[in-house]
Length: 131
Image 1 (tube, rainbow, N blue to C red):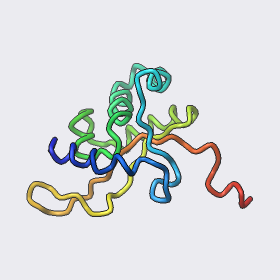
Image 2 (cartoon, rainbow, N blue to C red):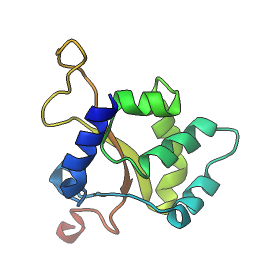
Image 3 (cartoon, one colour):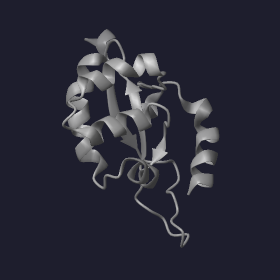
């Protein structure tokens, strides 16, 4: 699993810019000083949210299985939804996308895993100039 994750990290370093696939949002890789305000916005009563944001701030395009293992939560989308309620007002969000090619499990079968990232929201909507 770790070998796959490290290989995926290397492959995706060039794809961190915003594009149509990411909904014109840029993947956020944050340092400790940038991460602090996000972590402060999340209540201490929700440690899984803090683990999720902290993990994704340094591990963009993390497959579902890697996120599950790192933060010890099985329902990532529930935690992402709760985190987004706080992060949105700071200009960030947790999101996922399907990989271009389905990820394989250890039996070489396709999985329904997604790639999870922390995104920096754009300053304006992609279609603001049209309206």
